[in-house]
Image (cartoon, rainbow, N blue to C red; front, side, top):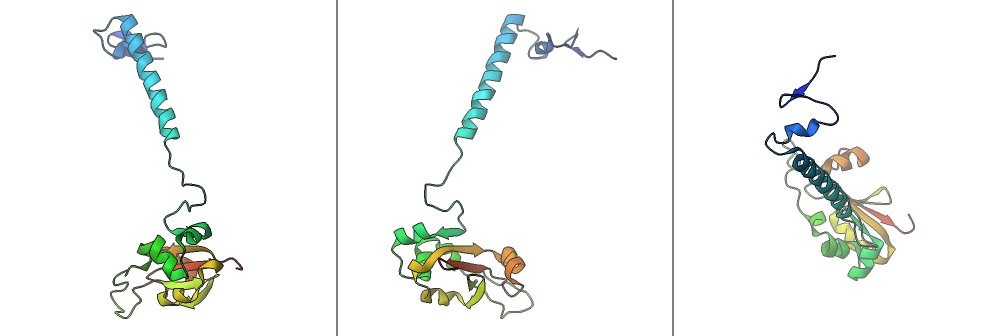
Length: 161
């Protein structure tokens, strides 16, 4: 087996630190290596401790509104809850087709998996009946609900559903 040489010396388990800096004396090199290793462990441990967790009773996703959030918002209906909590759900998606200019620009509404109506139909769904509201963007909406949902879907799941 061929030998590997670092800084003019054969590499092995006891002299790998020679490539750190050839001008540092051996004990100093080992001290620097220990400090680097300790720093790396502290950084890795700190990175795991700094992950963001949503507060209790809040949705972990910006695309989902849960019943607890709706209740705290004091909304009367689904439209008002969305307007207060995730206004971006109500935004115009712009042209969704270069062929069909009449293609919808706003998400369709589905309640418990069934098509319910256009965006304004959210006004008819009482807030106290809602378990969750979720926005499916264009690709997800077309996959789950079909090609007529190019502007996305707002899915309302009721407490009964």
